[in-house]
Image 1 (cartoon, rainbow, N blue to C red):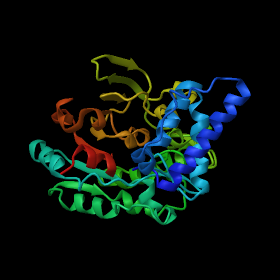
Image 2 (tube, rainbow, N blue to C red):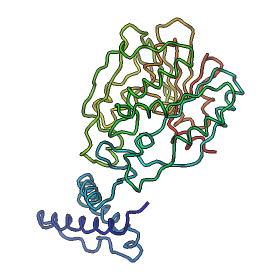
Image 3 (cartoon, one colour):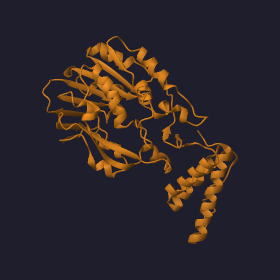
Image 4 (cartoon, rainbow, N blue to C red):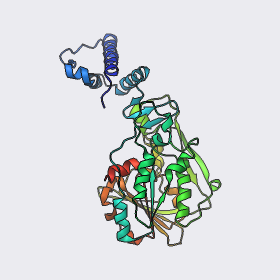
Length: 361
């Protein structure tokens, strides 16, 4: 959606002022012919500001500084959203999108075809849990109702985990990152605790985990969209159960057909990158087969989006093998990646937003 008329023109004034200051201070020549000309429509819909920003970035090459100046101006005059991200004192939250009603059709068809014990977890966004903290004009998509409707359409034999109310009961805890769209390992643990009991296992007690604070300066994907510094950086944690199972082999298959073999699920190099969340599984792949030293013949097939990444370390305490299939890369063709009949249980774990986009009714 375009900026409001007032916001757009305040931004234009700011950008032109910055341009003139730089020309005076650097001795650059004013490029009158190339400078974007205002037209009636571009003035009305705010696109003139976008044209000026693009011109300055191409000619002066410091997009981040200009973007931060624009963002601060927007906030000063009451605009509480930058690049589809709501700005609050405590956290950044992505706008609640409603791309459709979502559907249980795909999971129902899967269960009817393979008749394997199947478990279903839809994860709400932080903006659904912290809805009361959103700006007054924020759009609500009522994810609680959307999840409930999808769950109510699932067939007999599919067991649903109520992640929404588990997380809502913990809203005063550190269950979502402040600068990233994902839940934290802490939030994932409590949903794992409920899910794994439904799946017939005793969850590992929280007190048995050693928690390592890998980074205390994590700024996630919502920060990358906004470059807004006022929200406190996040802490990226790794949970280790020292007496538990150990990963013995990992095989990752990518979209281009290449296969990578390694001995661990974690990618420590991601901690030095702009996408620290990739520490949990590494760069996105189509599928990943993880073997552990457990000999219980329990094998889990996990269909997931990237919300599943930080839950996998908890699930690994119960299975000799987990095969992870990335729904964001496979879409509705998810069951073609591996043979589901080779596994003893199946879990679908996905954010409600991605589920709606992938399996829109």
